[in-house]
Amino acid sequence: MCAYCDRVTRTIDWVDGAVALIDQTRLPDELIVLRVEDVPTLVDSIQRLAVRGAPAIGVAGAFGVVLALSEANFPAAVQELRNARPTAVNLARMVDRVAARAGEGFEAALGEALAIRDEEIAASRLMGERGAEVVDQLVGDGRVRAMTICNTGGLATVERGTALAVIQTLHEAGRLEEALVLETRPLLQGARLTAWELQRLGAPYRLVVDAAAPSLLARGAADVILTGADRVAANGDTANKIGTFGLALGARHADVPFVVVAPESTLDAATPTGAEIEIEDRGAEEVVSLKGVAIAPEGTAAVNPAFDVTPCELITALVTERRVVRLSGGERL
Ligand code: MRU
Image 1 (tube, helix red, strand yellow):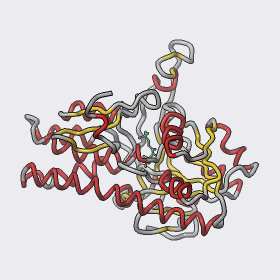
Image 2 (cartoon, helix red, strand yellow; image 1 turned 180 degrees about the vertical axis):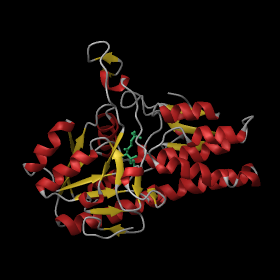
Image 3 (cartoon, protein in one colour; image 1 turned 135 degrees about the vertical axis):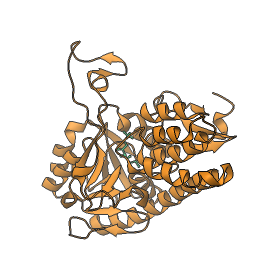
Image 4 (spheres, helix red, strand yellow; image 1 turned 45 degrees about the horizontal axis):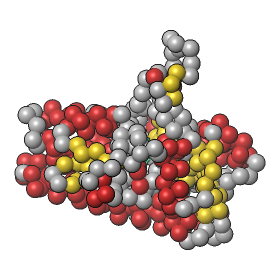
């Protein structure tokens, strides 16, 4: 492992004049920290999901604008960063926030990016605590079986996470019976990343194939579902990893509370409903192959939406660092 690696404890940070990020494509096999010094490499890291998760790519975009100050064409570099992925609102929002300070010079831009990093860290801790309180209210203060999809832990933010921060908080309070982790095809963020994080935390968990979730819910295997978000529209409709909508439908059928945990930085008042959220299409390759090995006949076409939209009526509560909004009860942002 590189000498640099043991100095990096966060998923993403600014270290010695460059962006340091854990290469999430290498987990769980290897923990590698990349040093990223230019915008094209950072854009590539975002697009191939070396850094991923809405808050983490927001922080990446923020640091990216600082790197863009050294690029020959600053506006073009900023645009490239902004457009690296379309669905999570955090990316464009944080790029714009730091770009607005760029005229004041390097130190002002870096200060803004570091403030964004620190805000996400503080938000994660508060979401964990507030989310655990909401779980108490919804399912009682005994031991909890929580189902989750994708990866919403420290890897998806800077530290601790969103929905997984709630699970971590419950675990630290001795209240986590188990986490049921959906594997999250096609890129297996649940199996590769959430399982890795829970194992490091010493938290009890079992992995579940995505298709098993509705029937497990119907058989009473989980008390609550905790998910993250990539963009929450003004009416509360929520874009998150593909499979989340199906999970919400299964939860409604089984009368299991469905809780979205996301920082205020993921709320998008400018997008009226989920219908206006752009869903990233990641192409066929990720569907027809697994870790580079073909799993379908050559020439097979595939559809690969990376996200779906869960209608607000199916969301029992949205938990941010500042508030709890009972969406299915008719409350609005
Ligand atoms: O494609 P990804 O891995 O970036 O998708 C991530 C998710 O869908 C997460 O659930 C979401 O960003 C919330 S992360 C705290």
